Amino acid sequence: MALGIELREVDPVKVLELALQHGLAAYDAAYLAVAESEGCELWTADRPLYDAVKDNNRLVRWIGDYPA
Image 1 (cartoon, rainbow, N blue to C red):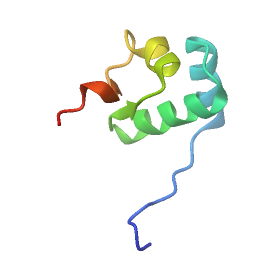
Image 2 (image 1 turned 45 degrees about the vertical axis):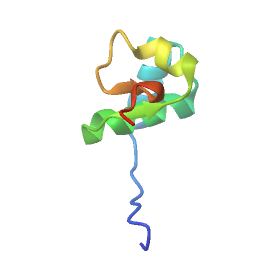
Image 3 (image 1 turned 180 degrees about the vertical axis):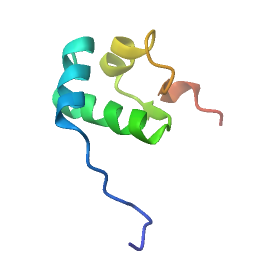
């Protein structure tokens, strides 16, 4: 693809587990599942998502902490 974007599939059971564990919407849990499966950081400006997982997941980062 011209932008270098690749689609990733996520395990729906993992998405459900993360959603229930952290009280997340399915789409937020899906982003988190992809970050975990790829071993990459998930930078977010979604405060409820960040607050829900910040203490239990080292991959989630607050966008305001991004070095300028």
